[in-house]
Length: 332
Ligand SMILES: Cc1cc2nc3c(=O)[nH]c(=O)nc-3n(C[C@H](O)[C@H](O)[C@H](O)COP(=O)(O)OP(=O)(O)OC[C@H]3O[C@@H](n4cnc5c(N)ncnc54)[C@H](O)[C@@H]3O)c2cc1C
Image (cartoon, rainbow, N blue to C red; front, side):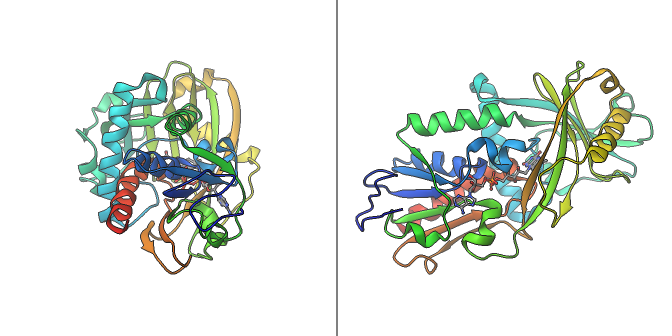
């Protein structure tokens, strides 16, 4: 980057108000929310959007492995509303409202996240696969990420935004480019701001053809591993794993076989499905999401950090983006 002091960078454009670092679901949502307030926004991303963790995500509304609970409940509710409206109003956006049954072996009580979801109720016995005595039924947004991320990018560029590929070594590389930086680098925060509390939480998924499934099933407490079946329009995403600290990106064939076995036990119709492939993504795990203003890291620049969304970046992105806007408006 070769910034001039006046908020201009040859690669990013002139008179920028904000540069967002990161073009995963968190960065794109923040960039669009800031554009909606009339600000001129550019995005810097090291990776193509199709190579981000966000692209691999399953990606269903649910607050997996993320905190703090009180803020997650607020961010999650807002995102639930935005994604539900997107499903209703923008058929090309890749968002569906999906009936879901969450499976339990013990009575679940009323989970803390239920307030953010419309109409959580007890599942009927005929909705439960063999071996399960309890379930909660509800509908949540399911996001087909390859379609949805492309849709977000198209909206961003149509509104005049520029997306630039560069791998930063520090947020200070962007000093002077814009008065505000919004930092959404996910796992990249380990290097960009030296935050070692961010750790990879590896997730492997398997994609199959869809043999006619229309209901998501999930068992968060399966004794053999985290298990879910998420039918999309043309395929089904099966999961999964939550491997803290592991960061290799090659799918393990034994894990693929184990995922297929667990998921077929939940949804026997999968026995007739063809395996399309397997993929791995690295969730940006952190004890809590970091969403706060920092005026020390890049002198003369307001930095808003928005990273560490664990297994819930899709679930929280719009709620976090709304908070980013409030923080930026309070300081500029
Ligand atoms: C298998 C799997 C299933 C999942 N399922 C769900 C789900 O059902 N629901 C849900 O809500 N979430 C789910 N997640 C989690 C979700 O994918 C993440 O929380 C989310 O993608 C994080 O988004 P992000 O934008 O913060 O990060 P990313 O998508 O990782 O994007 C980070 C961006 O920062 C950029 N960057 C990083 N370092 C630098 C640098 N040095 N310079 C410039 N740019 C940089 C990258 O290039 C990229 O553009 C799942 C994840 C996995 C792996």
